[in-house]
Image (tube, rainbow, N blue to C red):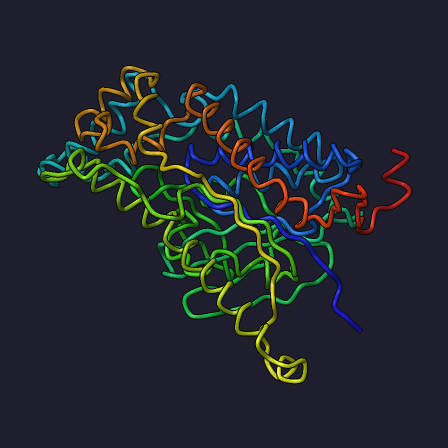
Length: 408
């Protein structure tokens, strides 16, 4: 008996860059609708995400009983986003977090008054809690899982306390947990704190306490030490995976002259962030493709002797580097944030990589959404094949879809 076919969605991390993912999903919705895909039908049994991608993933999972509604809701949030919805951008808030943090970075712990209560991060992301409550409908997530519309949701975070990378997953049916070198999984009910932890960009946003293995640990961004980002989807049973990244996987195409000279602090920080958010995914995609190629050379009998299995993979990532795009929109940041970032060179062209992760402003996110739509539609044939749509006969190979959902 052949194993059931399960389609998964994996959304990578990347701060404000995650707006690109919404553009890709909107284009996919448009293509599926064109060929008669029911607006309510969720094309993904398994949804996984990390960092800002975990927020998008959970928002989609919460409305998995109506795919069009879930994408439209996300689109409305990202198209009208403001920095103040994600982190404090007023003068007082910036002084309390960013200015103190930079002062300590410059002068060390000579400033006695902050010995007992040092600033925990460059920015105060307390406004994000309110945005998450607006974005999510967690009781509806439970209903989607219990009804079978969704098999599982998984989000990842990195434990500063335990030193391991942890995938938290929620499912209605029992799914065995897994453990690998420096990474493990924990079955828990996903909540706002898990998303705050998963999206806590190191040094930029504060760590978040979570209970894991009957103890409290402090967690940060899920992209840290994420050596196999796509693996949770495979462990949860996926045989087909759509990966939506947040960076130009082919590598940055920069004008050397513009980036020559001693790097600014922002340029170094942007390079480090790109390493955190992009490198692990690039390596993992290459690994999966190599495994697929190797397995295709084996006989059916030989394939039965290995635990490896082929995975139908489609990866959609930005067709251009996002550094220069962010540089064109950095002027839309609130003055206190722009002033803070200018002190480390993030408002210069060379610091565009760092700005690209923090620019939660509509002018920038709308550009990313548009790029996601263009990139996806340019790969129309690949997308249709991934969803088993025959463009000639307009035949859709539909998966399980209950009569109850069709009539609701």
